[in-house]
Length: 362
Image 1 (tube, rainbow, N blue to C red):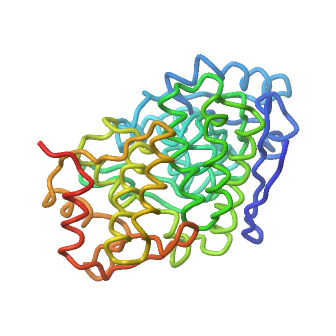
Image 2 (image 1 turned 135 degrees about the horizontal axis):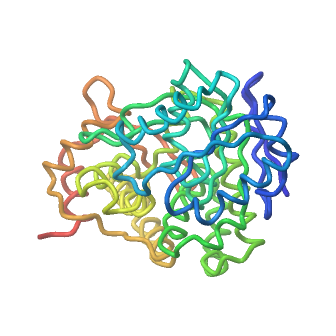
């Protein structure tokens, strides 16, 4: 097991990464002081891991309540969130009752938001079971739900007490979900870690084959990158915005296609190629760099062509992005592989060219 720390002064917390962590009571019990907790999971993960977690906690005298949500991005909404509140209230959960998120990014985001808002804040534990959640959404305290007009537009910054990334849970992850998580892994190499990007180029086949050693290294390196960024800029006033490479385009894809039609990582992959194409048109990176990154996404089995929403629709949806400032869409772009910047000064004609070149046509 490896342990990293997200350094946020008195709100710092550990990220434990390894196999078999679901059975490690010593990692969880210090965060369940009053022997009562609620586990929030979904219909896919519950049959796989809920009983393992429940039995381990109950064997140490913990009263475990569980709430099982429907699975899928389309359920990341206010109606599903209310199911968590209903369970908390009907079970008379108190401020000392931690919520444990057992699942992927949707479960983690919604459980975190429920924890941030129930009784104005209760403890929160992340046990991510997808690669995407282990390397990205479980770390850093972004919580929230979607709105029909925009993804993750309603939420709060609320840090967990601890993150348990059990690599063994990835054994049951469908290949498509594994590939979607790899999109976020590649992102760290592109924005701030060139040597990691080069390592991924050499080890992609082993990553796709679920080589345990390679998976653990990729997860730990990704979490280390994210922990450093979050410690420097918790509330995204500066450097943390760079973590959104590909997300301005990607969120537009997810919203425009209907939540769940494209997995988040798939949309981020296509959105990243759009961001790199735009960077190239601005003269910041070379065409060879775009081709190199496209090849790595191809090797990972991820989409590199965005869906045909039309330029007007893309711009309308991107106008609802959280990074919009002063009415300007701000994009995360590359100056080089390993060096990202945020820019709101993108000529309209270049954006139109990127939208035309990187998306499918009807």
